[in-house]
Image (tube, rainbow, N blue to C red; front, side):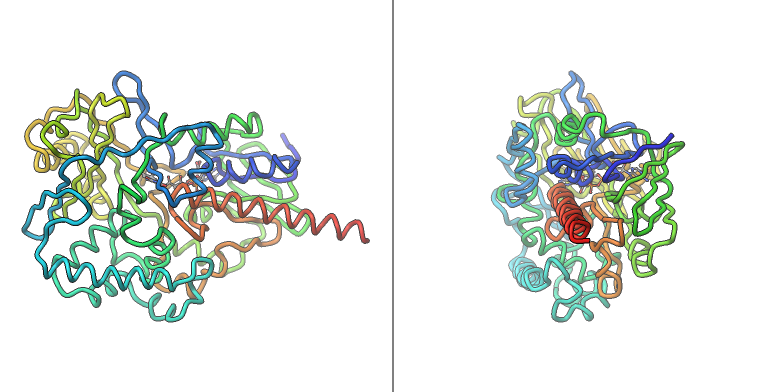
Length: 459
Ligand SMILES: Cc1cc2nc3c(=O)[nH]c(=O)nc-3n(C[C@H](O)[C@H](O)[C@H](O)COP(=O)(O)OP(=O)(O)OC[C@H]3O[C@@H](n4cnc5c(N)ncnc54)[C@H](O)[C@@H]3O)c2cc1C
């Protein structure tokens, strides 16, 4: 079976769907091939008892994520604020602090240490240019060290180091020892700095989408209709200057151009013929996915609220290091969402479901008391076991990768165009970054098509 279109798009996550919609709007004939039997990629809704949707993948959006917000508005979806009222819990070092506002009660020395290192990091984030961080002043030195090394040099207290480890695990779902300090600066800079990335009010966790974030992908898919073909994993792309032949199961789609809108470790699983230039291939070999298990624990009511807690908790001593109130807007049932991130996802994944559940409930009881031990439902997803994601929240660059191969992250190679949140200049790893990459790649194709047309007219 064969088909011929202008542009074939690999992957129906937000990046691929946005690219497809933009291209259709400008008159391109588009086909989206999606490996899974659903759209949305790293965005996925599950059901709470009673049927309300709850996200097991990406969920929050923030006020400076303008492209994600624009998509939500365009699709007629609504947001609601993340529940924030009450005392938050922070366990760092030996102490437990309960606080309102932004800053946990830590020793003055630890607070000063964290503030100074954060100031340096935020400055670095602003200095590292978002389009080509590998060209930033000092890029080589930053890329030659792990983020852990940078943190060790920038902090002077155990609590300071613990804080940045916790932040790294929460933001990247990987350890500071895993990634390049240049990648960490670029990523944090692209999200507006540490406070913007970890914050609720004014930050990346400020709002949730009514109906769950997969509604964004479903809304886009509805507009694209039968231009999306599900259950079609692309295994091979033959390409030359005249176009592409994309193989998915028994189907071969011919097109002038292909948009590959999958994360780097999934690009590495597609066979390109001829093979990709060595620099591009090296790049995708050096951008592994982070790892997280996301767990929604459901209670008959949000009991922590009546006890004065917001439901937000962080800890450097519990595997369930980050927790939020994830109760639906109507207030029932009560939901706490927690994450096993990085090394905690490694160890958590080796337990049986029953043991993992027991450990998670232990941690929730440690934060919010014994009522946390009696949920009415437990919904978890281990993203490392998803064949077409291979982890989450996004990929990160190992030391040396950006300065050696970063220049191949975005530019098209002949008819092959690259999208996906990992190619974004802002909020890479987020829904917003995925949308940016979709818009960018559609613009790239529109310009290339216009150039080709004017060349053929003048010939
Ligand atoms: C647990 C979790 C929590 C997160 N939290 C947030 C959050 O709160 N806020 C936020 O903004 N972001 C969050 N994210 C990240 C966010 O979900 C992603 O950045 C975004 O959805 C990525 O979109 P994408 O289109 O770039 O990639 P993907 O969503 O990964 O889409 C790629 C698509 O390509 C398909 N595919 C892969 N290989 C092939 C192939 N060979 N052939 C055909 N199709 C293929 C996949 O099935 C997938 O549908 C989270 C992610 C997870 C998993």
